Length: 250
Image 1 (cartoon, helix red, strand yellow):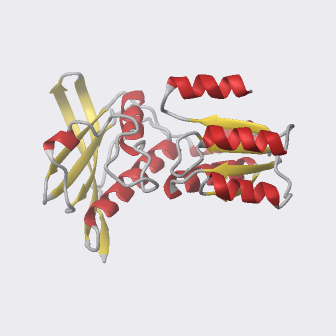
Image 2 (cartoon, rainbow, N blue to C red):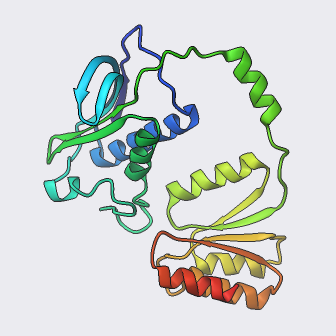
Image 3 (cartoon, one colour):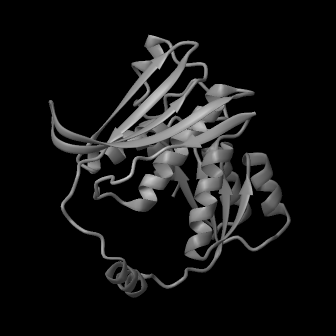
């Protein structure tokens, strides 16, 4: 069994980041580490202060957050592409290729940086470096603002069509948090089965690229034929031509 070990030094500096995004980033990194270790291994999460960094483009004080595993590691050709959107070495349905690009985007938006070091057969270290801030957190003010800004709960039933379990779980949780009812189908065939059951569905949210005989565009055409008034939203990071065709199907 793999084990998780968390270590953090006392007196860490304050950083200005979105806590929900940071939580998602650490979750993505831990999931990747878990998958790389197969049956057993160790994940270490560490944090420390890093003063007076002068390494372009970084300059100043930073907090270093590291997720370390002793899994399979990556060869140089894979390591060079880890931040490319939708690049993944996992089987279809096992990974979206969005985990590390999302980590990269978070680091850049936070004014910091991220680096990945890996040795094949030995493991991987992913290091986040958000900058130190002089701002002090104000829990009381934050709680008041969150209550005032909380949007009204949405309603409706969404059929989520996504073959990747991790992506589907994340999207479903977000939609339910907003107030929607969610039914998940792992492919076009299962989605059409849900439509055949005459269950109430207000919107189909589907990936375009899916394994199997039908992709998201095929599903949209058939679903529109069965329920002409049904709302359909297709998403993809691939193929501009396919996206233009989807818009034309509108």
